[in-house]
Image 1 (cartoon, rainbow, N blue to C red):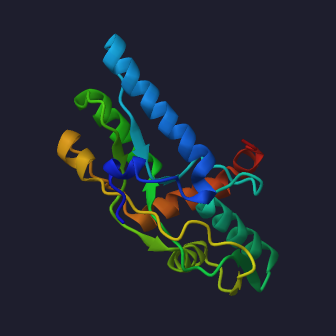
Image 2 (spheres, rainbow, N blue to C red; image 1 turned 180 degrees about the vertical axis):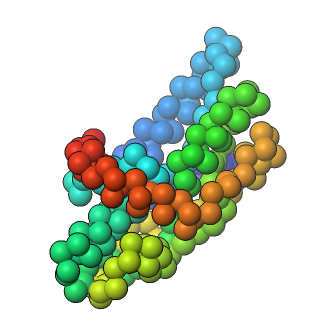
Length: 200
């Protein structure tokens, strides 16, 4: 860590990510072959974990940030005295706000035309335990957090090296994490039916 683009082919993907990790490698290989054989102008961007307004909040398909926001909002509204969170909280992740990701895609399409893949990230890694503390604070939930250590943590760490994006087309994430969370929480509270309806 951090994960460099050159590390993509260093061994089999981490088990919990292997199915879509292998599929992404196949997509990259196809893109590079099309560039070489047909001159196709295509690039391959790899954003880290995205979050923000418009995310999926249905428990069947949500990822960690929307899942935690929903748990905290539901608990606050129902008067519950605790929430349960999977794992130990020791795993860490890197999060990229959706507007930053969109800006990165735009910069790349305007200024990058190479076969090598590019990470989009913030260069910041956060333990899930710290993430839970921030979300409970921003939602205003003051109850107990109970960790269900019988459930998996998933991949121990995720963090990417974003220097190729910075050096190649000037991408640097701009949205402060807490500000991004506030916008996401506000959007969820104002759009709960839509947010929870998405199942894929």
